[in-house]
Image 1: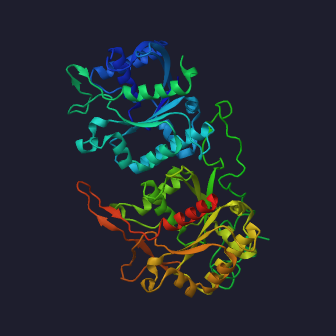
Image 2: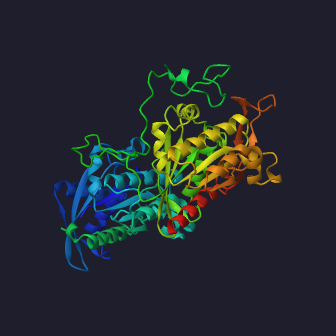
Image 3: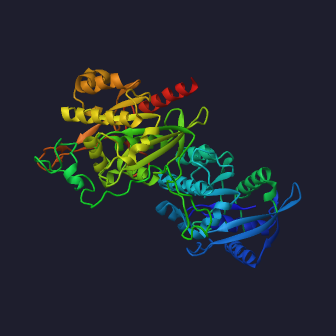
Length: 249
Length: 337
């Protein structure tokens, strides 16, 4: 099963993957997903490194512009006791931003067009949400078109819109909830998703839970306490599994 | 023979460069006209799907022909307000405020974002301004896709920005150039008529455009609905004393008569894309003119927002969505029947 975590530079892709890894390594009990093992040395090394950085109350380094990797994690769904392989990409947002400028998905990223589902990560605290919405729409249009779907057709791949850095929002904006905030700040993106994807859902996530006065991940009781990081993954893997059981494995 | 020697200037009514005409058609200096741009690609090449096929990545720009819905197109000459209308319509759609429809697709997002940025330019950068006059070497197409809330029906809106050469070709030859002939297959049209430009030459140009459209469709009477947009209505001095229909009959009588005879269905709308405008004044206190026309800029209401440095601009457009919605309602009713 291939799930593409995509998002522009600064949307929190690496932090989310690192935080997920940390939670899996610590045996997060509240999720239906549990770690079975990592597939390959590179995945084990890189993901553990990201998790370790976050555990120390630091942000993982920004993904280098030249680095594109695909990590495979074997996960066990506790409720059904089934194991499946999840492939997550790590890629620099700058490469995705090239699509806006060139109408072209860069060669290193063409593998994204084969994925079974997508989690679009959007920084919930963006200053200019209108322009960002247009860029995200353009990116999704590009992926949809590259998959051969006509503009007037609905894409069957599930799409989760994940609003990251949720903890940094003021309380009145958090009170809107993820659907309300997305509709309020990015109506164009919400309308586009509703017009092009049959399986869709909006999530709020905070990969580190809170930040300290210096803007670094806050350790609470000696641990990072993320919020909402498993929910998108549980939903999208469930959708893919229902739509195409063959994707499991 | 060069293009310049052959074409008639639609503004002056003489051959380009003759009898005091200061204009030149776009692209006139080229030895040969450029190949026509793809009209959102009626004959799209196969899109590469794999890295092997596309070593430089996968092209995902406007190539695929949208299918499965109504297609509407704007028609109108330069300075008829098409670009400003489109910029404001895009803003309306992007903010989810077009009644009954939602945003679904656009192959022109970069261009539309530029229009939006100009119409909403912060006060600290000079405030809102109209999009610069379109003066393209090639006719380009701006596109918006919508989906109806009720039944998810898909609709494509096309807004061609005609090049000076293509406009001159319609005026001179009376025919749509080859690269615009795809407009033949469209389901409805938005005809932009500048309400402040009603000279005999202006009326004649619109008549020529109408005749060209009928020739293109191969008919003497057009079945497809046409929404006539009287743009810049806010600049019409006696706007409050008359109705758009009466104004159109009075100032564009010949065009109105021609439409009565040649169009099965049309309706006139008074349109002001941005609402109030203000005249730009020079240091001498006199209006600034460019190309013989007084310069205006949008004058939206400024609304102070708590905690924000710049005010937010609140536009009060007139009939921005009604022409499009009228066309869509008309087409939908026809499809049901």
